[in-house]
Length: 326
Image (cartoon, rainbow, N blue to C red; front, side):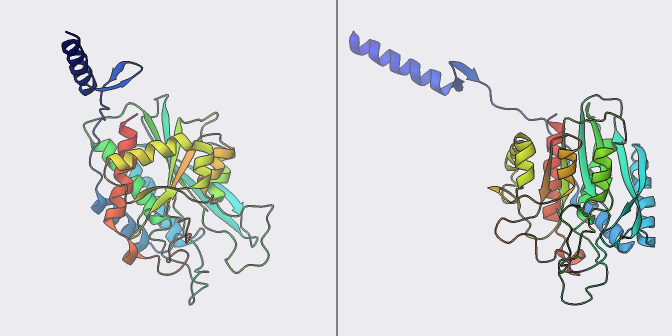
């Protein structure tokens, strides 16, 4: 009788353990994710090509003005509410630049909002190159890729039958890429000359009292062989958001792109959104803890030849999936 009872207890335990994962005696149902529409890497690639075709998007140039008009028109064509934040800023070499942050809002009346950011300007010099150092770069990846990913996300969410209830604010920051040259010996540590647009917006948001649940910045997100590590400031200010996005990337099969390893802190637009606007914002950026930025960074190699649709797909689909889980 004792043996039969023991066998019964063992069988009952096996049945119970196989019926689901348990925490504190409660059966845990498997996580069910909401499906997201497809992100088109071909469309994002075409958006990068269009930006490059305008020429370098250096402030106070014709390429910059043409790109600004095109970006505003694209967002409006998707039915988004668009506004610009035009201002002047001084550069490290005492130039006065006319800059423009572009803000496009999806579902503007929604209280819960997510902020998606990128920068749309390009660098006026190739200071990491060995030739044509004083000429502006194409910025296919550095500037172009982040903008393209946000444009494609905007196109997808506004054309999909599966509508989001949350609000999304796409902010394209201007004047991000004009810090002192790599070879400069006169850097002023008391002033950050990079990220002029995000510095201005973080202290002067487009709406008084604006806030968002969290933000995602995308920068350098289109190069062949890119790997995205957990950037230092992102982990300091918004570790939970980093972990969530990286876990989603793994669920989607993109763990070869999103690496579960920490990288150093880098100055980028998200720093000022976190510090001054008090919005937890992460940065998806190609910056390796082993070798830093990619070989193309701030050189003329940053052109369409380095752009890879697979990288665009991995980043774009991951961010899009993240939005649909909200």
